[in-house]
Length: 368
Image (tube, rainbow, N blue to C red; front, side):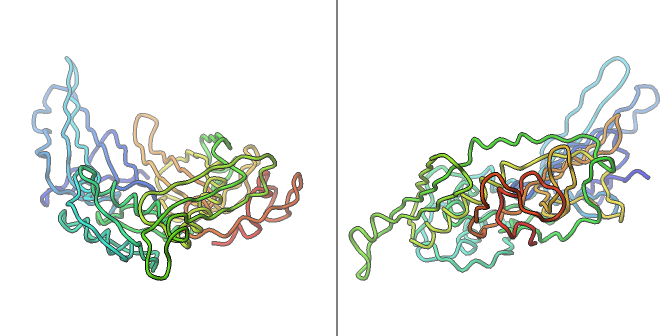
């Protein structure tokens, strides 16, 4: 049975769309949608959509709320035979992606508290899933940067992740909070298409985070001006060094966490893949959702492991309903990854099934 996409605008519901494109992801700051309906000219004058740009909307798949935001455009096109009209929009958080931040400065504040101050002028709520207590020594808005660009500088220093949710709130995200999927992605069962670049060009053997901070009565001179942390990844056989130089005030703890995160995240992102499955719902009736943990069993690419859905694209066109699921190991998104532990090179650990890449990940990669 096909699902019904319902767009609610000022208490008026629109459905019957002939084309649908909806995207939500753990690394996206605002969900977005494009909906269209096409009809023939004769006798269809009454089907015009009475939607205006800027109206607040809610987007549902059946009864599941997927997005709260604004209609940004109402495209229309026609030829001698047909008329196509539609609506496109984004989450409420689009305003903090597009709009400039109010100038301000904060000292020794948590990321979530600074984020709430930055988003307040635009009426965006902030949800803190991580509960990270690390204080940022200093953060100052740079003239002309958007709200999210300012928040993104905070996230890079702290190795945290942000996204939005179905209610249009900014979420300091914790990977896996959407729960476990009701079925695995499995070659020969539910996979229509798949691709994985398996590109390790952004993986290094040494990660050094260099920063600085203002001196205090207790710490001054070199201790303040030359903050450094190093992580060596023995899984990479040749010398490849990356130096990270985050902006703002950097403490030794922040530098170490950033170096740890770069090492674990870059290795995991090299194992990212995309899978296309039929329909928008799993066998248990639940929607495929981002930030969901699931098993990926694909001997052709070489996966047999737990992974995280980082993004979901819901599509409806002449081919029917499909979902494109972007997946990667959890370490790609974990703000506090476990330090990598190398296996002896050339040997593969025995674990869950036959996975070609187990030797590249920490021994506890399968923990949720």
